[in-house]
Each structure stands twice: as C-alpha cells, then as structure tokens.
Image (tube, rainbow, N blue to C red; front, side):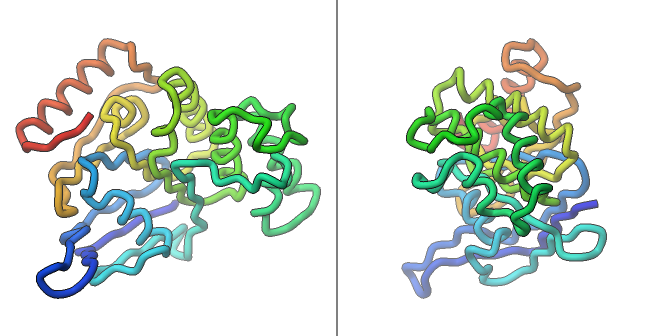
Length: 246
C-alpha cells in the first residue's frame, strides 16, 4: 500500500526580512487507494508542496516519506501542460519514459492510450492534437510507468469546461481501475468535490486550514444535486475562514 507521510514541513524562500514562507508546519498522511485534492488561493504553497514531494524542491525543515509496502514508492507526475516532445509521436512520448523498451512496455502504453480514447493516434505528433488530446497523452504517460503515487498539478486548468469535464471522468475511471494513490492540486472547488475522497484546504502562507472528507458515492457528476450541495457547503466553509477560492 502506498503512503505519503508529511511531518512538520516548512519551506522558506530567501532569508532575512524579505524572505517568503511558502509552507508552514504542514503535516498529513495519505494512504491507499484514495484521491486527495489540495485547494486554496493562489500563492498558498500548493505547487510548492508537490515540488517538494517530487524532489524538485527541498524543504527548509520537516520530513517527507513516500513509500510502497515499506520501500521507496514509484512516483508519477502530471503537469498543468502536457509537456510532450513535439518531434516524437504519441507512442514515442510514452515509450520515452519507460524503463524497458520492450513489447510489454509497448502493450502497456497502448492500454493506457486506449483508456484515454487515443489508441488510434499512436503515430500522431503532438502538434496534430488538440490541447485536450495532448493532456490525455500526458495522463496516459504518467499512468504508463505504473506509479504507486501520482501527483497532478492543476492538469485541467488550461482546458475549456467541456473538455475538462470529460477528462475528469476519464481520470476517475483510470484511478478506479489502477487503484493508485493520487494527490491532486486544483483551484476549482467543484472539481475537487467531484473527484476526491478528501480535500485539504491551504490558506495563505502555506498552512492547512481544513481537512474535509467527501463522503459521496462514485461516479459523481457536477450536475448531481449532492455534488452541487457539497460544493456549496465547502465554499461556505471557505468563506468562514476568509479564504478566496473559485
């Protein structure tokens, strides 16, 4: 079982009076087949947290452990943009990140491309795909390395509402099928309610302001009354904490 264990994490940029505190005493644990969303206003440390978890940044203090059955976990990452290599085909972009360049890897890549409904575009180049299609390839690429833990940093924020809604459904199907542990950063409260078992609310300065369990059956749809009412409840709690979120 994959587990993310964060204890008293702090991140400060700069020194002296001009220093900026991005994270302050952040502690939480995420384990097993769960999808946890992190929401909050711009500049509250959401992306900084993912950068530390993925090894891009180092914390000022505190500890991070990402494990699978006691050993080091394999981590995947989905960015805000697909970041595909434009001179490689769709299949070549997925194969580029595979540890072994063998038939098994190719079949695995094909399986995940099929799951995002791009199984017939393996020989296409990124420039021949729409933005939504490119992001589908990015999601398939992240799942194709079979990570124990998957980090997603606002992967649908640059897409139109209809495309984003479709991708949320596809992401949920892949998450359900693969039973991964997912940490999902978003500005969109409705998106967090639709996708998540749990929502961590970050406030300005990088503090955890709330930790909410979303106990609604899957699959969920933004148009469902229960989802809409839960979104209103979450936003009301944001207002009570003087947080700005959309």
